[in-house]
Image 1 (cartoon, rainbow, N blue to C red):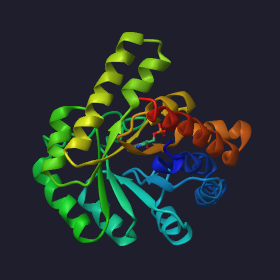
Image 2: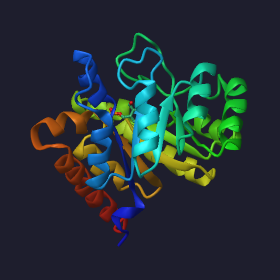
Image 3: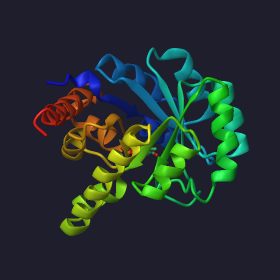
Length: 254
Ligand code: PXP
């Protein structure tokens, strides 16, 4: 039976910073949350430096890079300014996401087909600097094929539409989204891409998606930070790990 270590858990700590910024002080500290998540079993930490700095700030990224013992995944829009900052921080990985100032969260996948000309040199710059690039895209065959063509080593499949459909009780939409994800991860793997997934995942959806053998990493934030108000962050990480392990155990039976 595959071991849980075949599927990595990246914990996104953005919303610890959201809470800190609500009062403008230093507490709660996202770096402390990152250290606690790692101690409880997280395989990496993800943080998104948004253009408006609504949660994570430049100094948080620098401290995360300096203080955590596991890989730092730096989420960012592919703007010249952000590329410069990320190259300065030198994280283990960057995840390129679309970003609009007015959105509540990252609402859709990156259009790598439409932005291929600007993305190609950005991907090459990070690759040359030894920073692994992941492209956050919808499970759309055209986007997946273009990601492979642009020589990105990793894609992260946007699971938001699937998770939202489940939450809203839209069963047909949820099933269609699921079929798209299941086909997309197969296509991506066969195109030589490492496949991650994330956005909107909770214990149940993480367990379901963990059963797809092509997926190497899940990046999860909002639900876990919310849940940690009730049971603590360590316990939340342990419960998420257990959910993922139950999903991974189903791979052997598939
Ligand atoms: N992956 C990516 C690329 C994201 O942009 C986000 C949200 O910042 C996540 C994963 C985590 O999503 P959530 O906070 O909904 O778990």
